[in-house]
Image (cartoon, rainbow, N blue to C red; front, side):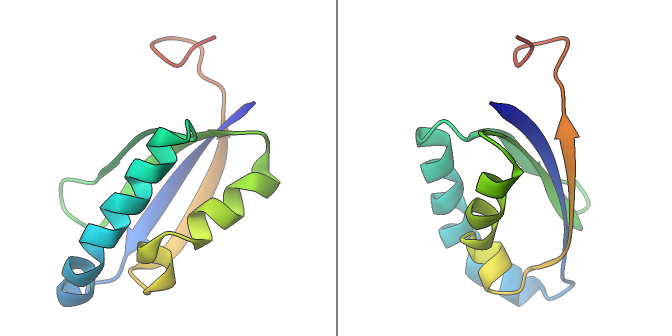
Length: 93
């Protein structure tokens, strides 16, 4: 399994963000239940958020992100993906 840090930048359209927030949260809870999403949260200024996912490889990552309502409904305007190797803390193995 591999870890990836996903950094999302959001649109400035707060109405769109508010509309998609509930379905987005439900999607993230599904990913947590499946064991793929390890931690997630928004930036305090509301401009984006970070997800840390554990999946078999990057090819498995894209569909999980594309299914998220924030992506599908246009809340996410930029995505940066970084392979991540936890060496300290709860995710270190």
